[in-house]
Length: 132
Image (cartoon, rainbow, N blue to C red; front, side, top):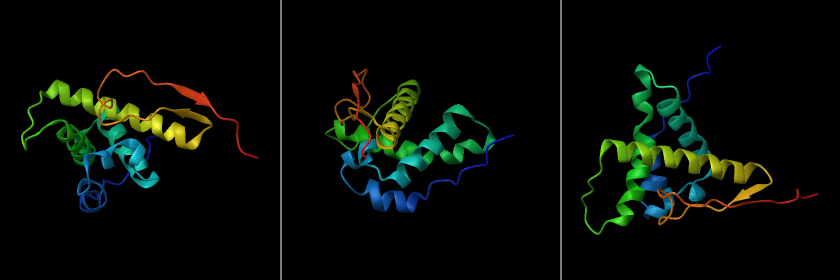
């Protein structure tokens, strides 16, 4: 049985709540639970289960990734290959998953920063005892 199709991200709300802010607002550790879930579902639809309709799910995650990438430039121009952009989307997907695990389990990981998000960074984790 196929999973139900998730809703497409509301780009107007994404712009108001995240993209109109500094690039650090687009880091997974800065996203609300709502946006973290929206991004995770959209990236899964685009990268793991692509079909004819999956392209409509790309706009939100792509906007977030590009917003972060612009943090590393001093101009309003960005040049990146298709393969590099794909790798950034994959890295972002991993960071979103790590953040979800950190928030929802007792395993806490070091969050990515603007300097480390699209790098082959060392992720450390600790197991925090559950609160009583």
